[in-house]
Length: 247
Image (cartoon, rainbow, N blue to C red):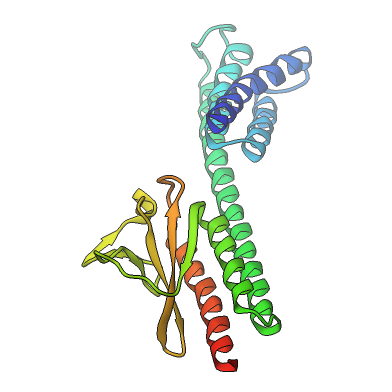
């Protein structure tokens, strides 16, 4: 609900901002040519695109074109445009605005992925330090379970050393792909299986346990996130293997 409200709010801002700017510029119309006004309206599109969502940027682009048409082209307060130069400027404003909105949205998406990757590397660094310094494997396993639950949005994440299954559960392979028997489960479309998925824990070249990952909902899960989950499980396996070697 909050995301929907946020998207609607940015659409409203995208619609309003260009009209407000176009109205503010009206007293200076005799000093500014239409090309300059169009460039200033692009600034409002960039501002909305940088701070808001793609939908808000698209709304700002369309609103800028309409505001320019109504307030700065003949006949005024009409969607008709009599001058070909003004028509070209209006179309260019619309196309540039749409392009800026798309580029800004992609930039935010790439930045979000980069931030997520940095957080994943920090988690691995923290767990690796615990494996090297902590005396108890239980602490490392518990911390890995917490990191998995946080990263994948899990309702439950439990570690099992001994288990017996009446049927083979879905499992995550080393490449971050979820298999259910011979079939691939598309986590980008369906999220993790709602009844849980097995994440094997390996140590000394054999499987010594597993995490059971139970999702909160059907949110999309990228393969990269599952590859990182495998790396976290490997840290738990290393701690368990080291602990068994010591004992």
